[in-house]
Amino acid sequence: MTDLTRIIEAILFVAEEPVSAEELAHIANQPLTLVSDSLSELGDELTANHGIVLRNVAGGWRLYTEASVLPYLETYAASDRAKKLTNASMETLAVVAYKQPVSRGQVTEIRGVDSERALKNLERRGLIGEIGTAAGPGQAILYGTTPLFLEKMGVASISDLPPLADHVPPAEIVETLEMPMRPESSSNDSTN
Image (tube, rainbow, N blue to C red; front, top):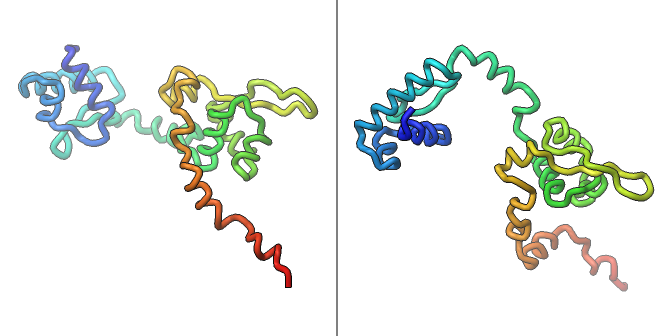
């Protein structure tokens, strides 16, 4: 497989829509004829040895699953591991990632709702795990992220996650958002 064929394969692997041969030629800074030859080479290689195929669709090229493996993909898609995370699970995962080691009680306190189900879901998917117990009464189980979490996030370590401060709104905005949820002090302090 040529370097150009590898480049094209990598581009098509991440592309969300078909990519035209002309665009591939522009990106790779190669003549269209070489790109066409590489597309043919890639198509032959995939068809002969892989579970994916290359197709020319909608004015461009795209990678697709080879038809004979479809039943296995359907089984995988129905598994817990392949299902998308709920908002509750995403919130819980964020708390664990940034506050670890953290107990179920701490996660619940931060989120403001019971987080046991979300923690069990994340643990079953292998994204978090028990990493110890807290000192003191009750010795609560402490949770942390797993190597699978790091892999899915595309980072080498927790320290590579973006700083949480970058995603927190300024204090004035938080104050404005919280205002409707605060009890009115004037109704409690009325003196008639």
